Figure 1: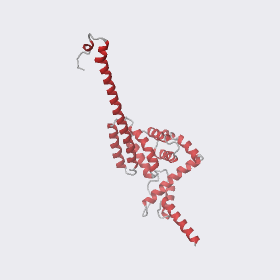
Figure 2: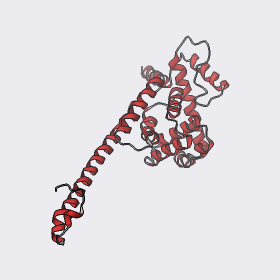
Figure 3: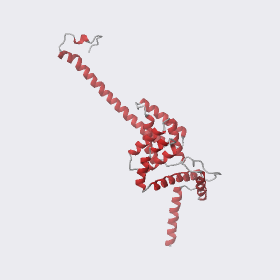
Length: 260
């Protein structure tokens, strides 16, 4: 269709059929083409953004304890997401995508607590918003005990905002049903903290002259941390897994001796 400065000239002295064929129909077809192209482009951008969120979450999960790499990786994915049309709430969506792989594949430790806290800090996300993102992730995995228990644990040791911590009240109710009572839930959370520190002490190995760092990150007091340190030291700085393996071998050896 030839361009004219005055669109009125295209329809002057023409009947409705001519106007439809020469003006309205081409314009409508152009509109449909543009709309379809936009949908295709948006669809491709959405798929790409989704891939970036998922891969970014996995990459950061693998960097626990390496603060510099965590920051560099997050900033890199943030730029990629921005240029692929991701909405302005990149950080909160990133937290939602990160929650499940972090809670299911990363062992609870002082480093994992500190790393998550550091990530939220560089994201500049308020505790309340980060909490809501984690809760959304938990709702998509309603029957996963590991996700719920670790989400509750991290909420207690990463967030400082009381309102953010209260967001996790439904998880306490969920875990209460799973564990059989509130006391059992609290005991499980306590065991998680002590076990995490015990493994941290064992990982640091022999030659330590003072209690291992990290007890504050998992919410222990110095007295309990010292007790765990001394117990682990007496056991040769073996981790829980190593102790279980040793106990299993001891039982096998004992059973073999009794059969002779």
